[in-house]
Image (tube, rainbow, N blue to C red; front, side):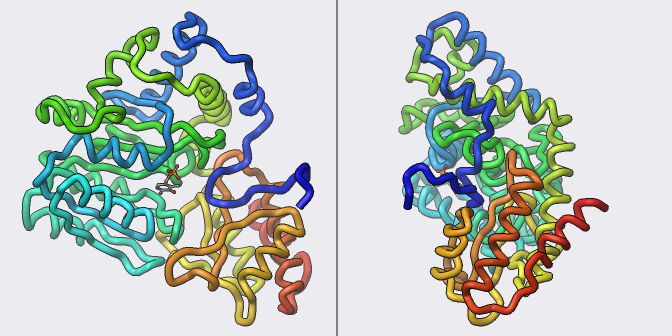
Length: 384
Ligand SMILES: *Cc1c(COP(=O)(O)O)cnc(C)c1O
């Protein structure tokens, strides 16, 4: 493919990066101790804490979402502890290996793909034995199922000994989250999903209880992801522990500014909800089935099961010819569905482009589709 060809990246991350964020990331480098950078970093740390209502500590650091998963587990559990992993798909399962390597006793609640573990199931499990922590994936990127994290938080509140860890990588800055208000002990996300920044930064939010649990543990085996190493830097970023991702700090700061300009997390969540519902209706109007059951559909992406007779590789190659990159599916749905990301700073024009490409790609795969039907459905839904 032509190196310069501009394609619309509609996968579940990385997501498109708008010009104002790109401009921040393209700024000339500054020293990490430069007072201008120190002040920018401090502001980002404080803004992220405030935006997500976390009275503990926000840690925006260099690394990806997976680094954040390790950071979450490392700071609140020790070898031999029990952990409950609530899994609604591939990313929920990723915690199993992380926890096993840490030497934790792992119990897993696994949902059938497309459905979601209920708060009642979690409550029953938490009443069986004492867990040091439990993990819940806010949006599992393999199934596009959203977990009821607020309702689960009410149960978590009855089990203060169990640290409630939420993987918000494919959710935060799109699905609504309030760390303290939902009794979350550790929340984390990454820059390249709904924040709409380039990959390379993650954010961990730790509640006061999570910080207290970390203190109780004494010295932990992990080094880079240790809260205790980073806490002095988060309070005073002129100090050094490991080099901050300078330009990503600026990119994230611009993303936060855009979120505030839009009206905050709630308004942004409503925009995503409306867009996701309209997208589902549009795709269903041309013969796709949405994997996630109604009532647990994420607003950040859709897993779209093909109408009969569509070849996955051919469909996605045709999407690319039409200027749109979408993702394949995972697990049992590999080859049977494609994944369409619609989070972050993606707007209606991008959605219309993507839906039109979907129609043309179906045609290329030999499916008789009425051109414009899904686009018209989408536009009509968005007008409501
Ligand atoms: C993308 C993703 C991750 C992994 O993040 P990386 O930045 O790729 O390491 C973890 N959890 C969820 C839910 C994700 O969507």
